[in-house]
Length: 617
Image 1 (cartoon, rainbow, N blue to C red):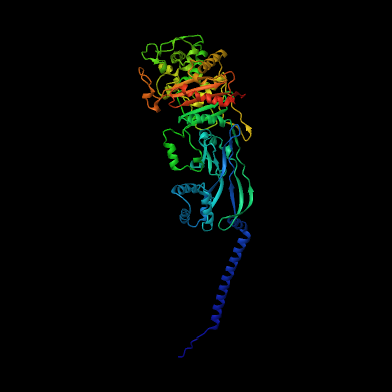
Image 2: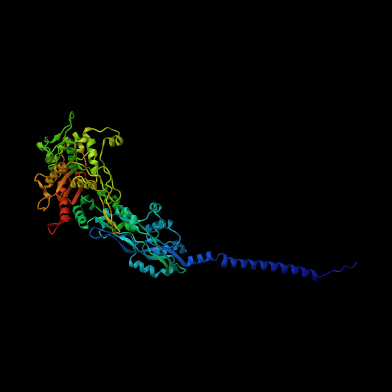
């Protein structure tokens, strides 16, 4: 049987070919439709999205930090300004290999590990494409080196900005405070938008208290950049609003006199000078001090360690934070309390054998060291203040009682913050029965009241509080809130009014006349400063014990370590008939207020005299 084998089926091949053509055509058509849809989507539907992304590659929105407000003294002397400074900045998104870039920079300029660590901290809290400083205060040589090598350092640039500068450095450190780099804690507290492009913030003092006013409002600008991120031109700009300038009540001349008087002898201490009528703080000094410019762009670990570990505590603001027993500087206010409550009179006299004893108590509370034999048989209020008789005030305090003492002294600004426009002010301590019961869980004892009579025991006050208190005496009961700033942005600030201390005019006369004799009487404890003065002063010396001396022992400075000797204090005001200046001074381990009082004379002369003649203040 024969079979025929068909080698080729043209009809089948045509069907297969037609099917393949149709399949390929459908695929090609589908791909063409997909491509057309993609083109349509890109060009029509998503046009604005991709246009915006394209613009972002070419146009960037950059913050323009505001200029920080300037600070001037009452006479227009510039105390805090802004100066140009150049920083090395990096934009990490534009850097392909960060480690390689850092290595290249290390080969060009000095970079240490601190620079890298701080950069990483700043980098962690930045926005995308924001330039982050790596090194501040570039030298001209460093700027030139980086500029020459910019073509091989993508993402690396030199940024010019204004940074804070304090022309007087140490002299105003504790009065003005300083600005420093924004840290992580502060970043959580501030508005990140308002501080865009700003690296500094007020840390302490006036710089922190008036931070919002000094900072200003941030601006913005749209800039066109090339592929490497270099700015080609500014397309649009909204200028920032600069911070307001501050005019202070501080007087640079007085500040220098006070600073030189304390620091020239290497003394640790504080001076506060006020106008007793207005509360204007004319000078505020704490020594030793420090250079605030070290903190502006970030202080080095070695410099900060030296300041932090110093036994003299240069970072400690003694004027606002130092709490000391006021010693005999408290006696004018205590004398007013005794007269006010009728415990003593102007004429009442007391026998002073050199010691005082409570009823049914063998302990002797002795008079101050130079008067161990007592002040005599007839000590009245005037003599007790002029010669600083402790026994008189022991007896008066005991008869007043702690309740009357606390209630009368509180309005003088003691035992609570004064409300000064600065930071970190301490409240001091004006003890009471309730305070001791709460803090010590013990009753109040009569012997503690006796110690209060000479400003010792639990009693503590800051130099600022003593300045406020003596200002209230100078104005016969007008209590003022101390103010460092006079005006903000040209607008004069109002000072809160406090209720006056009510007392009879004759009581003020007794105390103020006695304080005048402290300075102008040959028996006064500060008589050395009155010589040749063309005006009348009133003052009170004080001594604050640092270590306890046993009842039968004598205080011998030569046998005591310098840092354990008594503190010397002095409060005063002038002219007596129309006071325009009041001072409070403490010199740690200065031993006696009489040795401290010459500082007050220098301040009075500087403020009240011109060419040796009195001027109207």
